[in-house]
Length: 132
Image 1: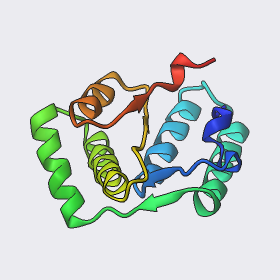
Image 2: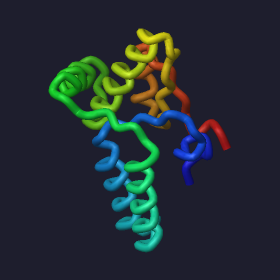
Image 3: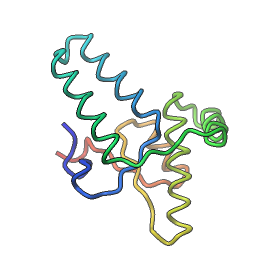
């Protein structure tokens, strides 16, 4: 279950790197295959996520520049591959928001390594597991 504030209907601006579709698909299918999620629940979850992806989220494209930044972050911070792509997307977006006077973004993650790397890159982080 996704927190209410992360639902597209909450009218928060939610940005995702385009690779998030692959990450979510992989996570859901792996849970279904391990028996922690029924086939019907997995299908419903993926269907809902893909609907939300097309209607409610802003996608950040994975460009050669973003991949170069990801490679650098993977080397400096030892991040997993997709986390190393997600973080420079957040760093780039945060820099744009600051430059335009919009404020800062908040990266939402429960991954301890990604959170530490984000904080080291001056990106505020919120752990969804800390909110019931």
